[in-house]
Image (cartoon, rainbow, N blue to C red):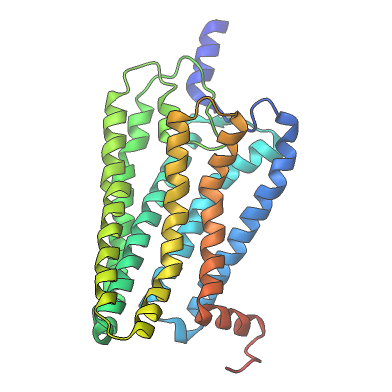
Length: 316
């Protein structure tokens, strides 16, 4: 009977990992995590409020920035419950259903963020290549359809994942590698053939992340080609300057993602602390830096933030 109960427990729960072999350091890890979550929340909510309140920011570029802020906020909150429970309260057990729910939201918002970055690249291409028709091409209706398409594509790509995981038996180890649930991490614990999960996971990544990377590459080739068509060097630099924030946002999203993938595949010899730090950076750092970078580099955003917090007492 005890063996049966033990097996069932493995079927119903997963155990999350904090800092391997350094559980006494988990509390101190919680402090910077709380700071990152707080900064993410305040920065993204501020951007959303400012864009909503200030009519001068009701333009396609800022609507896409609002989409990025909402996505970063959602992605951060998807991982927050388990991250803080592990590092702050040392609660490491998560139910199977809660784990696959978190898994669904993390992977969905990863796909949404990738799609929003592609939409922002399209916005910059239209602004540089067709400046006189910018407002007529990217109307409110078109922007809404782009946002809906990005969300539906990501949901559609990730939706089968919970069902594919749920059909697998977990009768051996139930210890995950991180403080949150990922499809590839849970899949390796299954005591059954996972070829279907592997194939579908690969196809989903190709359909979202890989395809978006190729589209971004082509978009910037077209953008640079359009910039070279501008006669004035000053206008060329001005056009490229409008793309810098987006280029940094793309790097902030894809570099940690690629780094996380490489460490999972080739970094088994590295210290578990490196894996833990990379896992946290992968989800938490881009949402913080994205909005800080956009706020600092975009004068309109920075000025409107100052105006909102000064209750409009500062006039331009």
